[in-house]
Length: 297
Length: 188
View 1 (cartoon, one colour):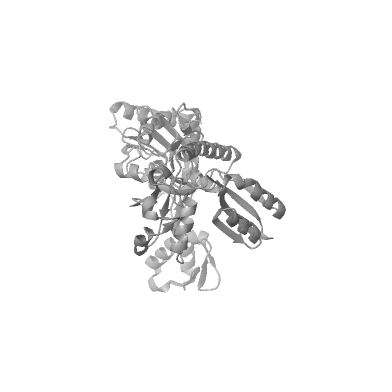
View 2 (cartoon, rainbow over the protein chains, first blue to last red):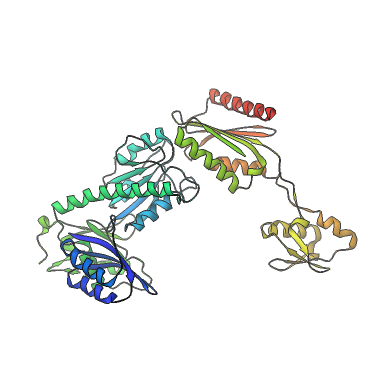
């Protein structure tokens, strides 16, 4: 199982760290060099953490955990109207990104109100494409209790956030609700931290499930194979997004056919993955389990 | 502007008080409103917002938003009013008024005309005050409460909103709230 962490530091002997990551069989998921500052999102085998920590100690720099890394999360609001967007949706999304998640936003077509709130079958399918969903609700206890029913129909793990702080609901974090400005006060930031921690727990459960029945190949490994085979084109932003049990590939239509023939170990991608068009964006690769397709070597 | 919210629980009341304050401030009508009262009943999904209109700010005149630079040149000092000012000058002086650059206007006036020019009203907040207050109410009330029933008096407005049909009982409640608001202002 891979562990994903973030390195922040200077450029001094930076290449040595990158080489070490490659040597131990790790991957660089994201790299950003700003003048003399560098930031790396690294995926590496859990048992090699000590080796990396020792190297970072030698170089100097910060090494932090990213509890939501490797997960693609969707933030769902009852609508994209001025009542729900941009606050607090954007604050929530930003906070999730800081913890390593890739985020997307979605407004339901008929999600507003209490009795009249609905979720369509297509919306459910879109939400189920993601590793987790965060539903952003308002200030009223009665409405949240009613809208809870919408979330229960979702298969993917979810978290509800809303206003009333002490609601006895599962997967719920209070203290957010409707906002007219940014969540930048200390109390609000603490609430966002609680939300992230709770979402981290939910994702850990999903990670554990995956670990019990391991995938044929890990998503970062497949990402690297895809990028070796079809290099990202100029202007293509995040062409391959890793999820906990698969990948989302946002590549041009003409390259989709080639994807199936990408070699992952001794197998082809089409043998170890279920490839389907996403209802949201690009194509989805769901990696089959090792028990289903056997090892790739 | 004083805002009061009742009926939604501690968190919702505090949150909606801030929403009322911020929304009317964003729309620039906060100074023209005396009081806002919001009654919420999340169980029946009924929301009543009542606004007591107070003193309206004085009209904006040409002299407030321009500065004379030379005999025939004026500079716009507040760009927010530029579109309204240019439209007004176009109507009033036709081709005599020319926009030279983003903030420069050329206009040749006689001695007699200058005073009248400076006193021209560019924007009167009274014109669209009610529209802006109604816009604010729409932004405050929950999006799902789409059945609306407005009640208006000379200097106060109320809006009942729900996702269900609005009964007579709620209309009476709204009128009662408006009466209460009036009484408070008389006491003050």
